[in-house]
Length: 107
Picture 1 (spheres, helix red, strand yellow):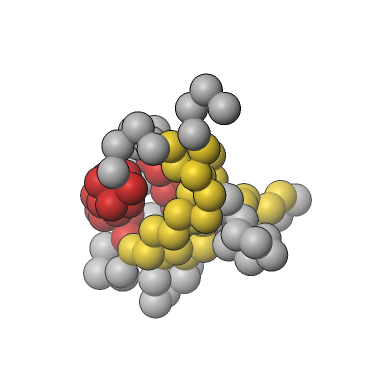
Picture 2 (cartoon, rainbow, N blue to C red; picture 1 turned 90 degrees about the vertical axis):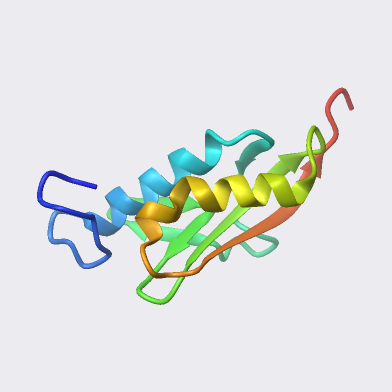
């Protein structure tokens, strides 16, 4: 959220970039999330001026987040925490969390 209200995908001040970066940061801060993933073909991404943010795609219909998780807790709990962490940014859009890979600690 910025000073003038929620950041939307159509914001003139690089709103899409701000929104997707915030979503990425919040997802990465969740327990059980090791890193973001682009998916098997790198299709979960947001293209920003001069950069590609892998692991988050948000448009006016939905928010998609692809993660690599640990088995330190049940995977549904990790996905639920990620959904909850970005709920205010998603607004009315559904948040789809996909777990693309699992890292077993100590291996």
